[in-house]
Length: 109
Image 1 (cartoon, rainbow, N blue to C red):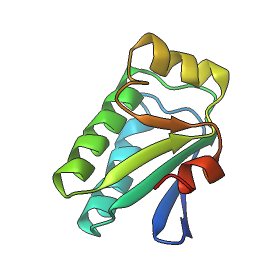
Image 2: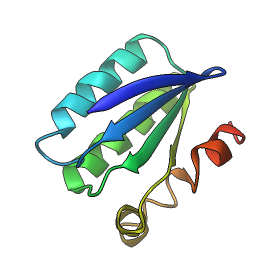
Image 3: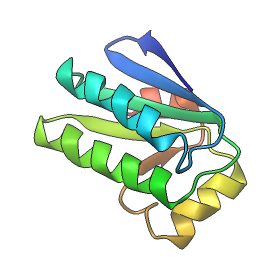
Image 4: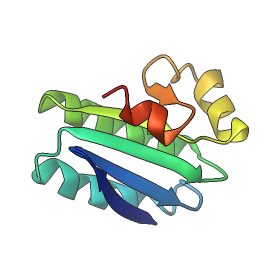
């Protein structure tokens, strides 16, 4: 579900598949490790995510809050229009920094 890559000092989490009630626990476990490892800059790449539900959104909000508590930051990138619409409808596009491309997000850390 999650493949981790690095670019400079940014941890890139490439999600694969739907982010929903069934996959959110795995995402939360991966994020637990990220926080334990004291990662400060995290980019979530949505290029392979066709769908996200409310439990996926809740997991991302929780992760953002946990990162901010340790002085970290999280950005999102490469969303399909369908996924981006979910963030806009729920007003979460105002909470998260969302970039069109991975490069645009990386240049802005």
